[in-house]
Length: 317
Image 1 (cartoon, rainbow, N blue to C red):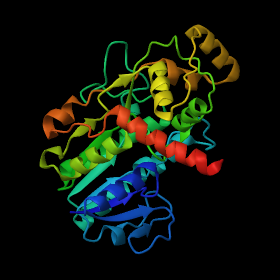
Image 2: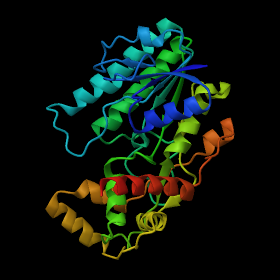
Image 3: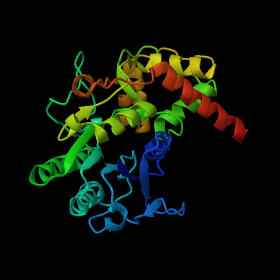
Image 4: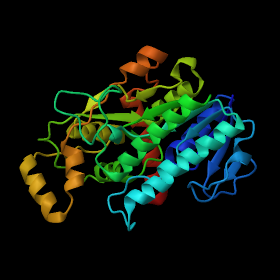
């Protein structure tokens, strides 16, 4: 089986390519701009006009990771149009050319944000829950999902949708990296009083599931939620990271209303909401249908992430 991986030089894409190579599976890596040799395809701008046919030659499976991602401060004049141009039009342009090239399967990495920002107390997100995208990024992912599934019904292209929650692991960026830095640096964190629950997904578990979705006959036409199988509160996550980094746990308690008040003053409400609200998903469907279980425990995932971070911190010091 021959894979095309888009966004191959990103956090997840590079890990996927490494695992495909380790398993002896052929892959062609695609990124916007790269000079990494014949195995890489530089597609330039991702939109409705991107030429994909040269990269799709003799490809069996596309794993589509490239996207315009959610950012806290979007500088675009019309963010929704930009999200649709890249995440919807760009995705469908690739999918239509995949059909033309005779590709058998298209694995689309969407987002748990399609289901909503937070799961209700005591409830979990599942594939059967009604989608409730709340921002432009999530809406664009939902629209791309629907267009892909419709294309799959009209053609022989087998579409598989994957909605991961927060993904962490070696090479992680954004807020999870900031949390690693804070805990490693011994900074106090005000999460002790927060009684939330969050699903996480180690990148190694995501990669394993993506390869299974690309190869298992029963995955065609399905949508799957993924997680490590364990949920943690923000305070429990800090404690687990501190343990993995062999760093002091300086988490302390501040009433949530105080955090929210400070966040409003500083214009950081969205950040605090992510740390105080719950987002729990169920991976029961993929476990039942495809027999998948996470190959890495959350402790193993955090341990590998901590080793990577400690090595990076040592090299920079």
